Image 1: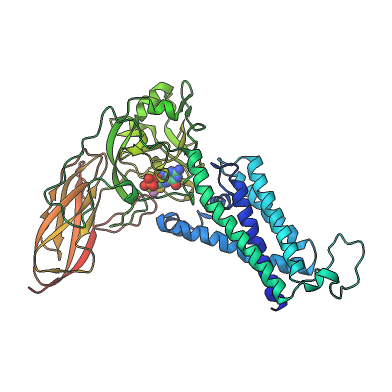
Image 2: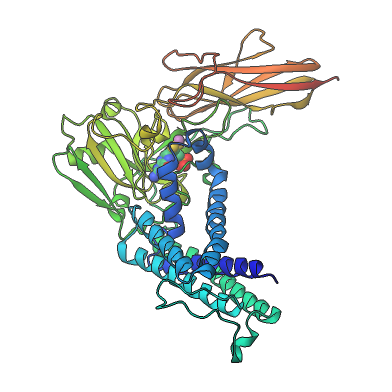
Length: 523
Ligand SMILES: Nc1nc2c(c(=O)[nH]1)N[C@H]1C(S)=C(S)[C@@H](COP(=O)(O)O)O[C@H]1N2
Ligand SMILES: [Mo]
């Protein structure tokens, strides 16, 4: 094996050992982010703004794994470099490894859930394991290391090894040490992953059930036109869309967690998880949607939420008249804010602890989140809620506001065709066209469909719990053979009908009619 290949191998194994070591040590503080997560969060928060268009894709559901794998690959890519530096001059590569450890600590300490001692420990142990592994492997791989800055005077060039070290660098020695280190790293990684998940979930202790709501929501029966492919009225938790800035949902230990109401209030109040669960819970069906949802997109869902009315908790704190903005802050530092005047009427707004009859899943904000009907998630729906802060509109901007999105963001009326699917083939005759439409807090009064820009046909609407939810709609179309374009538009409870012109999601939500093309086969 060439010198270069041995150097590369030593570097890769050393970095892998360092990463696994920091993940394992990170478990001493199970609800805090590990260094690798900490660095990813720091990266997202720092560069998310300049990646504005990417941001949606990056923080969307499927790109989390890509980000995590990317983080590992970038870290590993430094391995060969560090090893080369170390071979060229002793302690230089080691210093770079130590430097990365320190940077990891600094970046992670930015995270509100990180504490100094466990974070520093994870960084220092990781770096130390990396350096020691590097030294060990360079030695066993027979790579002569030039004297470092600490050497008193230049040493005579070494001409080889004596005694037992004479085997260093032989094929057999390189193979054995690589396999040994590789196996140790693999076992460590499996342990970090397996035990990690177990230890963290145990610490988070999500209960199996939550108390039944004193006032359960009325969920209507399925509409008579239920059609395969039409979204169900209530979306099950595991199918509900996810949008987070954090690469992994944070773990929250309920015995440590509290919800505080602070700022422009008569008295600050604090609630524990047990205190919230002990109250009379109400349940509401509310459609949640993401501002970055494209026309026809699936970043929208409808669920049953149970919790305490936000107004009830605000009354206990006493909101002062100067307060014009309510900001929800999460344990991971995310913030979302909306005008306090949003709550003036009887708009549905909950501190939710349950979703579809179960405790909030970790990914949807356990132990508590805000749900405010009719506002996009990024200004209202703070998950892993830790603080409700009363402030003014001028005094604070939420997470996405500083990144180019609108400060005020009511949900725009939208409609989506679920069936037939785009570019599908259907037999001629009676073809069901069906989908959903939403304008939460205002409700949907009419949905219309047209084919090939013909007459608008009024769709049949399914039953709803309230104006806070989307509505399933249906049209039976008498389809003639050929290629056709189907379009849909909805009208909300204020009489506002969707406009045809397409508007992109940034800065305050997409507009335009959703359309689909279908091919109708001859009879
Ligand atoms: N803590 C925290 N809360 C958050 C977010 C986030 O990134 N972090 N994303 C918000 C956005 S943009 C939306 S659209 C909704 C999505 O909620 P869901 O993931 O439960 O569907 O949560 C909101 N609450
Ligand atoms: Mo969102």
